[in-house]
Image (cartoon, rainbow, N blue to C red; front, side):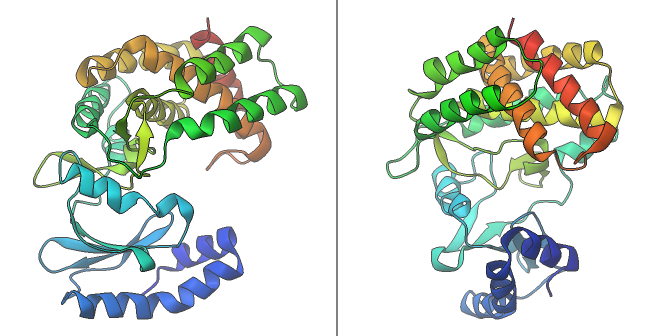
Length: 313
């Protein structure tokens, strides 16, 4: 039942705790299928942290590895109640399990990759409109992104001092200013927390629906910046754009996203500049997905540096 690739990455990431959870996972799934009177309806799928079991009735059973980052996902779905996101039908918080509305496996990232960068620019407007639907008042009891500000400031200072990088002091200072001016006090609105093209799926009830939220309270401009950061990464690896072309596409997509979402464009730009500086430092310490080392990582980091510098001016 457990996809081999998912099992391997779970153990690589979580070690013995991941293997223990995998050993228990088939029993957890069978118990939940029985408890909620569900019948399997397709092959088991998976994401980064959980398996997805299609069941009759156009729904899916999702069971995630127990991790603090997965705690508030069902709360976000409950707040949205199907507005811009898949619907939540049942939840079992002890087992990190949910019964959710089924969407298609096709992501916005895949949709954009099927076209050239020129013809995929419309995805930013689609995503901006979706984020506008998700931007609603947050309930009590959810974690606040403002609580991350002190850690972000500390990490920025440490990375800037310890790493060999070409970012001017003014660019790092600009990122620090974003932390001080935008991060420490944020709106009381729902934030997806991981709003990128791979977490936006084709659906039947609506053309696109969001999945895999973190469930924070904070600034929706952060979600916009996460979307643009991921788009930049996809454009770098998929289209092999030069930095001037990349910056031009990102500026176009920022404007489209801002207009569709109703979020101030300069606020999105400032969040994006902070995230670019963070990504520059993160890449030097950890690498990125498909670019873990060598010339490919060096190329990606160099372009991220140039984005951070250009957007910090």
